[in-house]
Length: 53
Image (cartoon, rainbow, N blue to C red; front, top):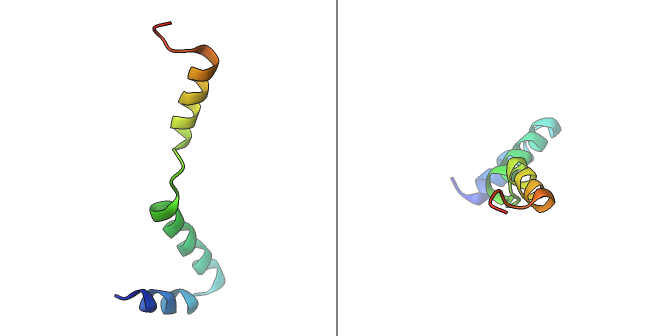
């Protein structure tokens, strides 16, 4: 499947399905933010320091 084929399929979707598809693509391929767990662990370390301290 070519990129043009994918774009055509997305354009032919209903709005709700298009939004879900684009969200899935974003989270799977383009979102480089760390997970919530990683962020929480970093914040805890910032507040309380390392275990060895």
